[in-house]
Image 1 (cartoon, rainbow, N blue to C red):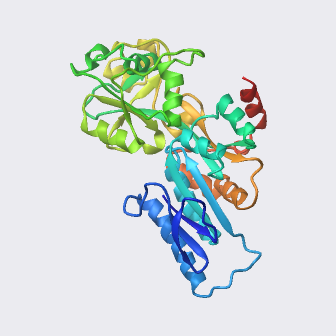
Image 2 (cartoon, rainbow, N blue to C red):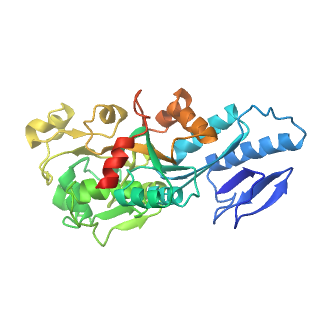
Length: 361
């Protein structure tokens, strides 16, 4: 990650002053290793710095500042695109966007090393309690909605699975695609690492079947990968692989399976003719849905969830500007274009009551 910050250098940061600004290289990230959008954000900021260094007079009434955002890899691309648009409107407010997982973002908020934590899961009661003890008062904002897609290789004939099928696959109860009516091929299960909010969501809803108090875990053979893109790469090149990711990462390189509720289908699905006619439920007793915006909106896709922003207290100043922009037409358009469902009129409200309930649980 590269951060551009005005006249402030935090302890442990390295950088060179440039006309009163500091260009800081943080953690293990560097320019060469950055994605295109992150590099674009940096270049936009450097362009602004260059103008300032050339004697540009900044209106003191114009918004200025720095906003650090850390957390969910699921929405990092949408946030990066939003930040690019935001800095065109507010060129003297610099924004740094990094991923690392929802857990990383929430921990950073608690430790006061980020202004905004992005998360693909809710904060846990123990996290809220820890934050309050440290004088941090989390405020929850729903920024968009998402469907967690399950993907397989294009050469895999399986195109639909129930939640219980997925449970049996990812807990190691089913280990060969033949058991599900597919090829005689070992199943390779892929998961995000434990700091990922998507990992936590999938574990609770699929591995533990939504049962509170369940201690069931992913099978020991499950491979933990560092990013959604890494899961796409592995599934695209491994006919036996299956993984999950936010539907914003769907591409034509893999195939998203339809997901249904109810008991395991075990390969006793409808004939191709029945499926083409839309009569799946008449044959299997299940209805299967693809991860689409429409199915997330109408709540028919079983693995749907909200996505969150968390701040310390009521957003103020540059942080409020960025959040308002993100929830506004331009920001929501960026989220929609990256595969997410925009929030409704009340979707961006700060969920104080929900946080209080979780804090007590």
